[in-house]
Image (cartoon, rainbow, N blue to C red; front, top):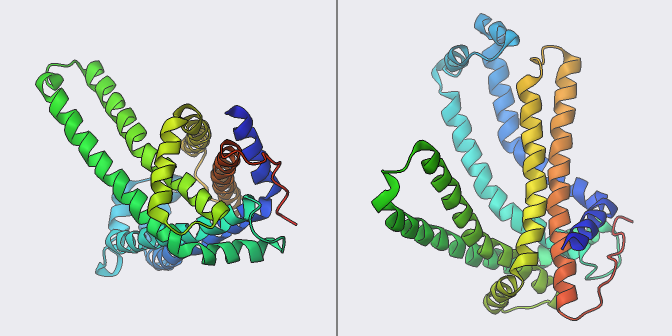
Length: 300
């Protein structure tokens, strides 16, 4: 398991151009929300003397007043834009996953990384979108059924628990939901990989086989995912801790440092996602009885 994880990380490092390409792709997507927000906030701050108060630290009351600039609720506008961006990102993730797997799996031709990435993204988009609908619907249904079952089983004694017991029960329920829904999301990854490797067309059959694969090899498949997702969670907690203790960015130099650190965290998160998919790809190829190759450097 850990060998696959380490090899996945090595593959991501070797394919650093793919990591940067995906980071840039989602950066461009985020700009759909960020740029209008920056323009709006700049106009609001330029006409509000109270905005200088925020240079000394966060003040929610001042921020709430500023969001009513020009009698328009900024938070409502940004929430709508963010919701639209989330829907777009679901479709975009399907496109990106096709390019990522086609590049790092070694499938396809040996032309440049841009050709392999966008060629694979376009070729597998339709099949990956159908897989996303199957896997996403399955995960949602499983989550609802598990939540209802847990609520029914725990309701007789939930009110009698101590505060510590309530927190423990909450952690237990979240773990059960994560494991249950994670089965269908992990199967989605392995189904995508199988579609790319075999150029399979019957996506429902591929997804059902992927479910069986994850169940049969649950220790390794879940273990690889938990290891890399845990690393990503630790990265985000470290970044949040830094944000909590760092002084307010009130100069151009401190703002530039904050932006650089934030983007470094985002690039690392993308790299960890690529690492997980690469580890899953190598494991799926190995368990299928094929050669267990060292995935070549695809960045050339």
